[in-house]
Image 1 (spheres, rainbow, N blue to C red):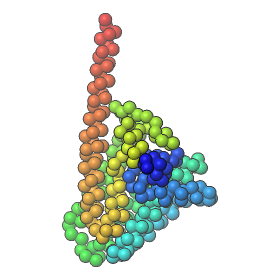
Image 2: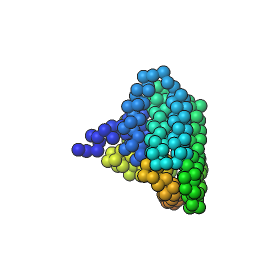
Image 3: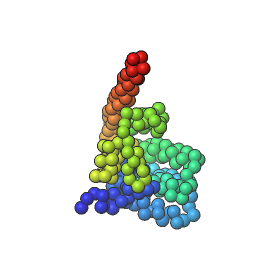
Image 4: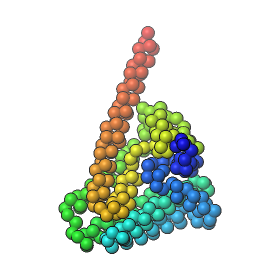
Length: 262
């Protein structure tokens, strides 16, 4: 069976889903897409769904604060439900044409509220049961630092022309995503457009770590992977591509000037 014939791909290749990540395609969209379709038939607005997502995240934080393994698993499941609702609010907004600047602000602001609340609850729960070693606190600080790096990077680069400098893009999928040839290959074969993002980092921190009973270890793994990915992909590779594109443009300009002077 080709991947394009699977349920995973059908969910990722949805006109209201854009730029699916690994955690989305394999662990979230198979549930969030049918839930979103059902929510579209209700009177719930995208902003209301965003509020529900925030409230469920607070429930997850309460479980994390308890600290025992059963509570950690319940917290992880609650967090995943919160993320599924977080995906659903955007889906409903796009399908019902209810997207707005206020909704965009609420969605992203709530996302940034959840992370520190969940992280603090997770750390306090573990500290109450068994004092967190210094490396655990360092891991948490590194995770926060990685979030700051990613947010600063996206703010500086934006989503306009600067984000696609030096790239030949093509429209792919029913949502018409603009992708590079490599991203298009990933999408057609695996239903993803990138290998690692902050979504995978938060999944490691708030789902995988708690479920396995090693939350501090996975906070550290998540932070280190995020920083390494940022430095190589968002840093070195991105600016290498931008500088090469600038050099090619300058070379073409010199050639044009030379021809004009002939």
